[in-house]
Image 1 (cartoon, helix red, strand yellow):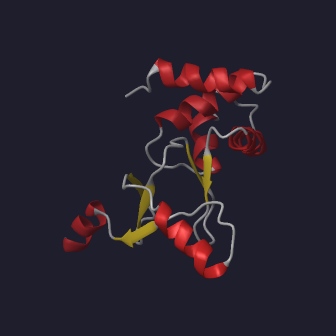
Image 2: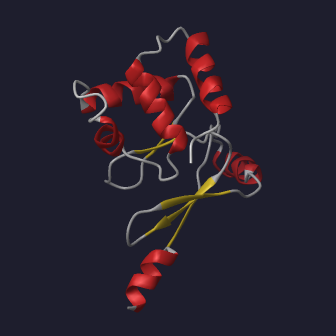
Length: 147
């Protein structure tokens, strides 16, 4: 299931507009991220692309992800001590996380902006953003546990 060429082209245009050179590695990392429904780690991306780019290092993947993050193309998701995962879906959404296998699934819910304004009123903070995570057991792990 390939990502629409339109989304990839939009992302490439965003890179160009930001003055970022489009190297074959950058193109591949971006395409992989746009296709990934799993919120991959940098290591996942590296492993998936190493046969295509034998000279690419994990550091190259990290550097490219940092560039993408800086211009707003990807989000870095940090949960506990595990490796950061990367999400190319920058629309407002939340995450459900399996406590067994670590799978992260997107779900959409009307943005909880009222929580931010309440937090500002109660704490005096200027709130920049929030994130919400819901934890549980995914259907595959439930199935595995039943056997």
